Image (cartoon, rainbow, N blue to C red; front, side):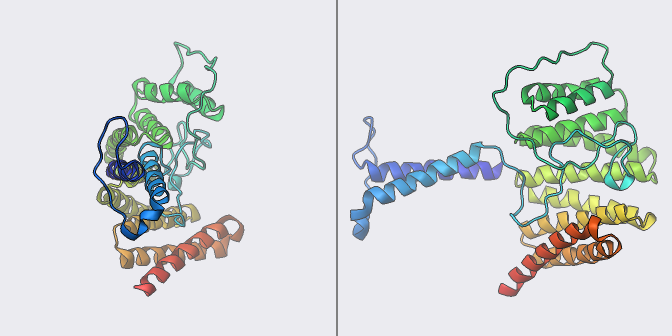
Length: 321
């Protein structure tokens, strides 16, 4: 949110400067202060249009949806939108056996002016039916109807597990559509449910994984909005849970989840300027990714390549300081 406000202010500033350079006498009866260009006076039109173009770009950046924080080379494994969950996901993936909720793989495109959907609500639909209908709406890119159903889903939940799934679905959907405030609110609701479930069974690996998954969503939402301290805090807590789960369950899935949690926190640490700490986190992740790739190169080889690239980028940045 802060980044959007700064982008908006920069856009207004540059657009105003471009206007003042291109029309020193003002337009539409509005007198503007004269801007002297000195030795560049002969290039006034070119400079004016460049400033105006920068202003327009900044203004568009402040209002258009964004696709999540982080640099271009960073691993972005956070779920955005995908309600095509596999049944009975493992605890390491942060899913639940009832209804399922696995990692998302692709971002939904922005809303388009599609014709009104013909899917009608059914009064006696169960919570599972509503989630299945939401998946169908997402698959068929019926975004307005999907948004309405995602917002309705929390009110249809009757158990803590359902409330968690509904809130997390809403958060994932809102984040995919660039609705950062709504996503943050939904993830907060999901977090309250996840903490409640974990408190009831503190040693249950499935519930702990659910909590870690929601904390990751909270961190992703905070990262999108430029709230880096909140992102780091959420990722730190998620990482501690992943460490505990990996100690108790040495399976490849649990270790991969730990590796991804390390990298997510590493990205957030780098964004805060903590490059040495980020490098340590990536080195730990690289060690895990290397061992997993040695076990199954086909399944985990791509993870290792991504981690190696990011580790190299961080080492190069530190070497250049």
